[in-house]
Length: 336
Image (cartoon, rainbow, N blue to C red; front, side, top):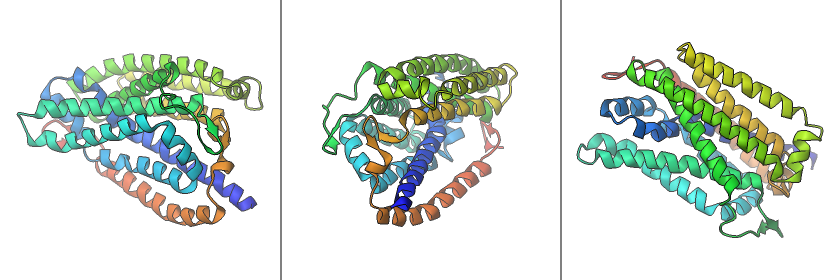
């Protein structure tokens, strides 16, 4: 029984890792789509899309792993979250489909290229907003009665969830801008530095608003951040966030290539840590814990065998693809 208890927390960590990996990897290519309208020059748009063309579909593997893992090892959480968040999740999936199709079709047409540019931008923006709204709806709490969702169809749509949606979309745009800085040279990179400064400031403002708003969504959050045994995180996380913001500003101001992107990733990781501190040990706030939502121990054991084989393979081919396509991208010839 104790081993099953430990397995449930191990699986919670694996799913959290998959979700975080998806956010930091797919976040920057969604961000590139969000930035598309600010770069009407076709050559600039080609360079932006080419910078992520070799890796974007592999990034979404982690979304499949996180969603599939949730269904397999936390079926109760999956059964509660899905009906609560049907609309934002369906919108996200449809947006990702249109965005993925635009990657393939945009290069095969001239007459309809504008349509696929809109699909790429719209799909990226709607997917980012949907992910942020779903996150906000989860943070504010999902009503559960008798181990089933007991809320309404529109419970996910609140001012708080809309704010988290805007915050995530802005943060993704920041990741996209700093990725382009790292991968390109010349006019595109110079313009992205200006946008990255603006997006960095906006992202930090939105993170600040969401962070101050979150403790008032549930009494447990407030106690955990300010009065409980984990109160020290309310000091550590903001200090580290300020350090990441300084590194981001300095990297952009001194025209570094890699530092701004790493600083942007750090901002997302720290935000994820803050959410984890608020949630733990809940998997569906405010009432469904990790242990309560876990599948039987035999299922956790069986799924863990597959995960121990699959996750290293995904990590290896992800690392290999980024290594192969490392360096700057040439506007005419592709990667150097």
